[in-house]
Amino acid sequence: MTSVQGRLTALTQSAFDAMGFDAALGAVLPSTKDGAPFQCNGAMAAAGALKKKGEKANPRDIAAKIVEALSAHDEFASLEIAGPGFINITPSDALINARAAQLADDARTGAPLTPEAKTIVIDYGGANVAKPMHVGHLRSAVIGESLKRLLRFEGHTVIGDIHMGDWGLQMGHLITELEDEQPDLSYFDGSVTSGYPAQSPVTMEDMARLYPAASAKSKADPSRLERSRVATAELQAGRAGYRALLDHFITESIKALKKGYGDLGVSFDLWKGEAAVDPLIPGMINDLTAMGITEEDDGALIIRVDDVAPAKEMAPVMLRASSGAVLYHTTDLATLIDRKTQINPDFILYVVDQRQALHFEQVFRAAIRAGWYTPDQLYHAGFGTMNGKDGKPFTTRGGGVLKLEDLLSMMHEAASERVKAAGMADKFGKDELEDITGKVAIAALKFADLQNQRMTNYIFDIERFTAFEGKTGPYLLYAAVRIKSILRKARAAGLDGGPINAAAPAEQNLILMLDSFEMALSVSTDKFAPHILCDHVYKLAQAFSRFYSDCPILADDTPEDVKASRLSLAALTLRQIELCLDLLGMEAPERM
Ligand code: ARG
Image 1 (cartoon, protein in one colour):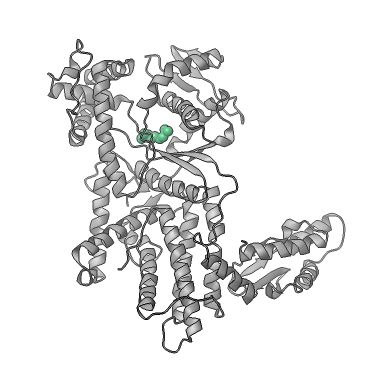
Image 2 (cartoon, rainbow, N blue to C red):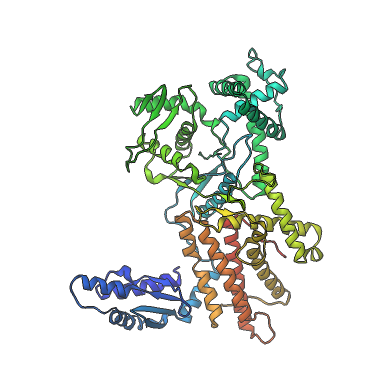
């Protein structure tokens, strides 16, 4: 199966090749102007190449010869030369309709599977146990989930790992604060080393109270901080009661996170964290030392990474602080070993806040220096922040840290108002209304995030995100729902789809838009850029709108075969919109 663009490119490339030019000059691209849907700009470069060799060349003459050669093929309906030598290309009706038939027949609406299926780990989410989530975690979850779905759809085996932060000072804070509250628990009795209760002494709410309390006290009182530090070190050194508490903290957090992420439509295959790789650290440090790549530096143990190609001045990786504590670098390196032995992935993608770029560069360089991975196997897909109207990373109304549940309920509230303002409360029962509201809220939040180029910061604007008009998630849901309703009406009238025979410009334009899905997908996955897919689905919805207003489907005076063709086209469009929505992590309701 080849796209229309692909077929036109193949023909145009052989025309350039036959004239002795570089075949690549024959690339056919979607046109940037109204008029012909495609263009080829190769004649200018071809003339340039001749001039370099000292030959005379006029790009319009070259274009004319190419056009003459291409005219022999009935794939072209028209070929026009414009300006200095652009060739404007309109494909034939037959080519467009043949492609439409293929797309309509394909559950994937033209998206190919990769010929090179890989095993890929995506490290995303990254929430910390006990510490509240921030917008970075939200963005990581939303973008990571979409990239996971995109790569899976392309045919790769993808394993999503949340990689929780569960090995830092926050654990010492929790332990010591809990000890102050409930000193009699057996976990704190150094003489007890086993037989702890199976039931957690804390809930998620307790942790949400204990951590900030300890953290605030520690800011005011250095000795309080020191207690948390010591507890963290003892935990890391293996103190049994503390390890047992850690297990409770992690289990309780996972329960809460599963719910929060679940509500957001985000799921993970692995719920590992930093603590999980702790047992690997001593062996790893021995191995690295045996390789001769570690150095003692003021009591700390480091790996220099500035000489790893491309050489660049950079702080070293800290394997162990002079206090003996292991650090963020260390757990990430140990995680790389864990993944290598457990999964042996071809590629690992880290979807983490761009502010951690240096950290990942250091970790990757160390792993490369150790010979565990090659540079092409590790990639950090960073992203900017979601900001409040004040331009600073978004916080909740009171200025406090973000909680996923709070954000979701804000979105839900706003979606509920929109849905009511659109009159849906009168149209639907309570359950259906609730379902619609939830889907609108999620689509609003996710699309607002994903439609931005990853690295850019964007402003949290709930009014704009939830609008049913404009480039928003709710608009796309509405577009899908509208097609569902057309198809329902057709079914009720006993009408079926039939062969697609597009004649009107809006119909052909819609088919070409559907056909460009393949390209949008490949750019989205190659660049880890869901915003390209967002653009595609938005343009597709607009193309459908134009088609629907120009080309009546169910009107009485539409001939039966035209009705059937247009119904097939509508069904195909719906299938592709729903595929895109799913790849972005959202879902359209049946009715709205
Ligand atoms: N827990 C970290 C944080 O909150 C994010 C983890 C990202 N993943 C990783 N492998 N380091 O900043």
